[in-house]
Length: 54
Image (tube, rainbow, N blue to C red; front, side):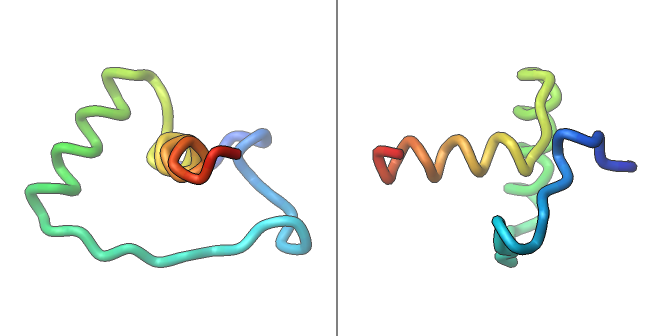
């Protein structure tokens, strides 16, 4: 699925990480973000920022 313009970040201001998930976890995550009408990228970033108090 192509990224929306607001989802594409400059590589000078952001970094990429790789997270391996089980098939079942990935499926549950896809369902969750679809229900919340967001992307995995935005959902994970928001979760990390919340946990870090950012």
